[in-house]
Amino acid sequence: MNFTLRVWRQADGESAGDLKTYQIENIEPTCSFLEMMDILNEQLNEENDEPVAFDSDCREGICGMCSMFINGKPHGPMEGTTTCQLYMRHFEDGDEITIEPWRSTAFPVVRDLVVNRSAFDRIMQAGGYVSVHSGPKPEPNSIPIEPEISEEALDAACCIGCGACVAACPNGSAMLYTSAKVSHLGLLPQGQPERFERVQNMVHQMEAEGFGSCRNYAECEAACPKEISIKFIGQMNRDFLRSTLSLPIKRRGKMDSQ
Image (cartoon, rainbow, N blue to C red; front, side, top):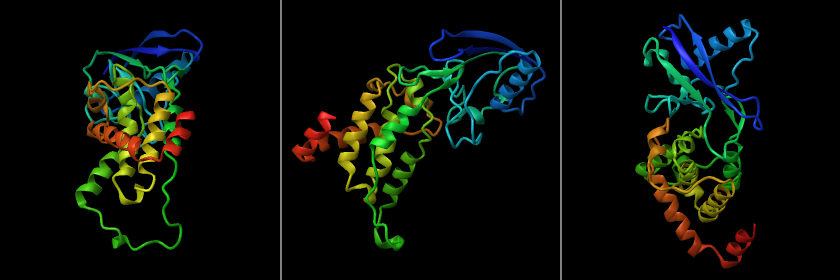
C-alpha cells in the first residue's frame, strides 16, 4: 500500500509549524499506524532529514500516549480505537492522510506531534488522596457494593487520559476527563469522605488550566477510545452543585482564595 502523508512539523513551542508532505510506499495492510510512522522515520533518517516526533508507549491501547489527530479525528477514523490500535488496512491504497497534534490551548505543542498534557496531571493531583485504612488488608466483602455501582465506577476508571475528548471538543473542554476521574472514586464507598472536596478541587484546577466549558456537543464521547459516556459529566455537575451546599463555609472560602 502506498500513501501520501501530510504531517505537522514544528520545531518547538515557539516556532511556527506547517504541514509537510511525504510519500511512503510498500506498507503492509497489517502494519499498525505507529509502525507506519516508524517506517517513515527510518526513511527520513536515510534521507538525512529530521524524524517526526510523536508520543507512544504501550502500543496496546492502554496508556493513551499515542495522541494524533488523523484526518480531522482524534486517533483516526475508527470508533473506540487508539492510534496504536489503528491499522493501515483501515485506509485505502493511495489515500492522503493528514496527521496533526491535539489542538488545545491547554495542550501546547512541544514538537511536531507531541503536546504537553501535564495539565491533566495537575487536575488529577488536585483530587488528592483517598483516606483509606492503611493497616491490614480488609475483608473484600466487608463493604458491600451494588454490582451496578461497581460496574459504573469501572466504566469511569477506563479513562486513559489521552486527551482525545479535549481535541474533539469545539471548546477544548476537559469535562469528560475530569468527570471520569471524579466519578470513579465518588461512586465507591472508599471515595466518599473526600467526595465533595475532591470535585471542588478538580473542577477549579480544570478551569485554572484554561480548558473551555462544556456545551453538550458530545464530540468528546464520540472521540473517546474507551467510549466513556457523557453521563459522568452530569454526575460531576450534580456533585459540584451539592458540594457548594455541603462543604463548610470556612473550607469553601479557603478554596476560593487559592
